[in-house]
Amino acid sequence: MNLNKVFIIGRLTADPQLKTTAGGQSVTSFSVATNRVWNNKAGEKQEETEFHNVVCWGRQAEVASQFSKGRLV
Image (tube, rainbow, N blue to C red):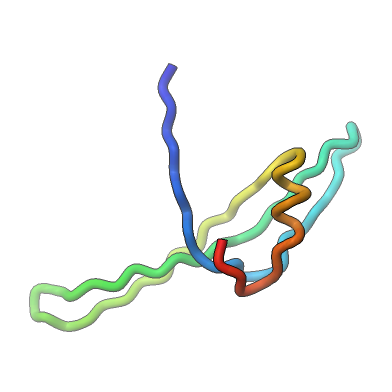
């Protein structure tokens, strides 16, 4: 079995949205913004922001829904 693991550390772009499926399972979706800063070949400072859409299920969804916009996650 192959496993890929990713750590996304950034700030919430909005409050997470907690919903419940018809089967009663909790699901939360939210977006995280991450920044990357580097110097190009000319020595000029460059900055890039990326947005990541995340979905959590079950107990993890319930915990994630307690965070608010702007929080580091």
